[in-house]
Length: 190
Image 1 (tube, rainbow, N blue to C red):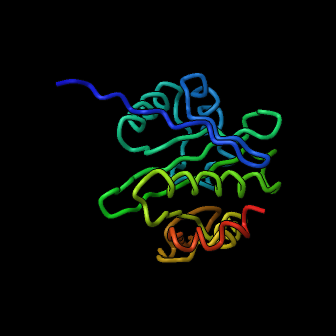
Image 2: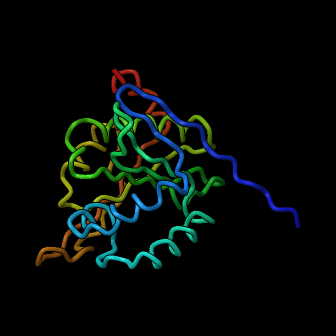
């Protein structure tokens, strides 16, 4: 059987942000970010810090079939600021899940919003996707607010889904439809 090479996405340039396709050179940086227990609670269900070997094995496995598209986020000085990716793509039914992570020094500066809008535009423009999903924990108020301002709406609520900080928290599944995104895009991308 002939092996089909996956086509790399292009570098995406937006106002104040650049999304660069994930390369092998970025893996060490991803390992550092995903090994920081101070940030894990914001964006993953994982509660433990993986060993370097475990991380790379998992990353390779995810790149083969779980991840749909992965980008490194850079700021205007071309410094790595985080990453964004889509996963669990169902192109028959037209949806994909998305996640964005920013390292602490780059949060609350609008970079996540800019990266998200650029990424969402790419996904809707190049794939037969009609809906994006994002799962956000109740305590991640900044992400919830950002996603709602971008046009995401709560479609699912998983009450008391995550134990963190001595209590149970709700997980929200938010959805952004293609039509909603494009009706708001001009206003959001100013």
